[in-house]
Amino acid sequence: MLDELLLSVAFDEFVEYGYAGASLTRIVERARMSKTTLYSRYASKEALFRAVVFSQIDHEKPYRALHSDTNPRDLAEGLERFAIDMLDASFEHRTQALNRVILGEVHRFPELAEAAEARMQRGVERIRQFLEDSSRLEGRRMENPGYVAEAFIHMIRGWYLNQLIAAKPTSKAEIRAWARRAVRALVRAAPGW
Image 1 (cartoon, one colour):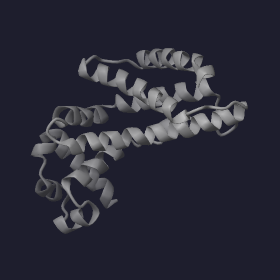
Image 2: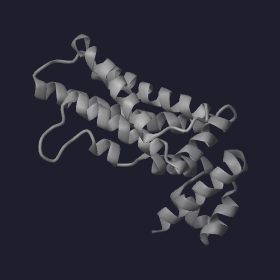
Image 3: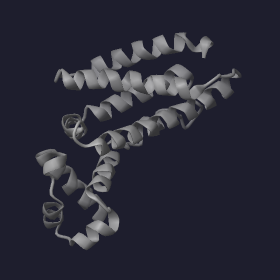
């Protein structure tokens, strides 16, 4: 598919040259397409970068973890599975490379921060919906599931960014142990939500 090819080539360009050094001319040459084709899909470098960001992190697996085919997941199980799957996806080499571009150039290009924020808000919304569904199934009321969802996503994001900045190798066992501890701490506070 043309869009997949374009996003793959653009991803490589952004990782290799950074956001500032990325060239739309090189991207279309590598993808063997015209600039008209590129601009008919993405109006600017910012729009293309945003699409690349979403294509890398918009894995369905973490969001599927919130639901089960047989019966609804309970609160702790759904949150822990989501955290593990999201971190597994975030620690993939390609996603880490893209996040390093964002971290390295965000001070010069606010649009990178906007793309990362929009990506985060997607996760917050999905967790908020899960919290509402979980509360309804368990017969309890939540004052503001949006705040809890935002806190949860920030927990995941903060730990991930700390590992990324420290350039510390992180094993799947460490991811699972952290997710279990973080969710346990959050769920213990559930009566106060």
